[in-house]
Image (cartoon, rainbow, N blue to C red; front, side):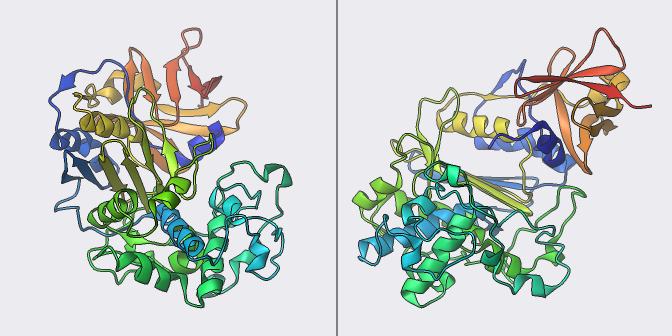
Length: 443
């Protein structure tokens, strides 16, 4: 779903730089050094795993030790696990993709029992979203009772016009988890362990996140850029995220899982796997996404995840077996688009582009620092200097800006560019997603 300008400013996906870039030698450590100052500036940490030429290597960014066995929440990458369990039930003859969910579950408010298993897997149900409608988050839950209710009772009305059309909705996978439990009369978490974790030897993977997990990466929030480990409530992950986003794992274990899923028949047959990656002209299959990157000749598949305090991305090339995985201990990534470009360049033995110097931007653009009001949107933001960098600050969150051309400050993650309006020095030209607005300096 395309983010609106308002949503972009509220969420502030962190910024990257395009423009005049010089080449440096390739290498995973080169990538780590490139991003280190920016992760330090926002108190974030990242781990990267690359599988290339039959071997794997890892590196950390702003992380003091090896990242391979650091545990983090994989978020919506959990959906791939849920899909595998459902497809196993299909192979066992316990369900068909054309079955309506009413065959397995009692009536649920605002849920059409005729919605099929395949429509749930492909996010084509038209169901309303449960996850994300809450006014609390994983680390700010006023009392436990909020997580002891049936969240499916909160499903909003369906959008019948979207039945058969893709619209990403976590509710679909919450229902799939319930169907798995109904068929097997055991918990979804037990099915994860007995059918996936144990068969492929995942040593540090857990059905849901909790403070008691050894070697757990501490999550951070966006607004304060602070550690929020003490606020973790396992019920949020187990009861709320559930079959749509509960699992905690490591880069090493996730690489093992993807090896078994993509390259063996440990979980499902090749014929079933081919159904899983039949995108039918779209970009979402049965719990797996087709990941097309501009300018890339290779085809990648995977399924990312974003959750409070964590994000995870994975890219796998079926033709070569190459793979790139990374985590960040924040819901959104620092310099996301630039990082993806660099990781795929490294897999392809292309040079890693260097950022132009960012230190000193606050001095060079000191006349632009201050608070602005965005016309037609009702939003304000601030350009603030800190340790030589320029940060875009909105709704309590900030992102480091970089120069992408003479007189241009850019955020290529969200597509924002800011340029001084030559006709009015106190005004910036704000561009994003084909829209051009003006941002007026506030007194």
